[in-house]
Length: 91
Image (cartoon, rainbow, N blue to C red; front, side, top):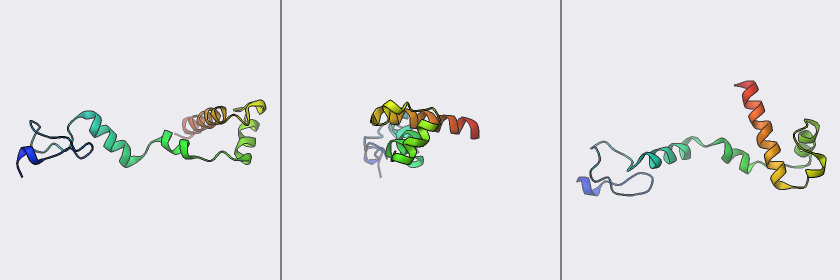
């Protein structure tokens, strides 16, 4: 396999002119590949379902104002805040 035949594992771009053992064409492709492999906290929280019990817990913890309980953006902010607080406490 020649140098021109090798492609980036992330974007399939050419690895021509890169080291013989290069797997990615750039640092951003390498980082994106790593993030895809290990996952990210924001990806996890974005998929979390904030149901009535979770909203009640956010309100009881003081992270969410009761007037904002039906505002999806405010719920996500409150949930992200609680996740950061939890991580800080237990890290």
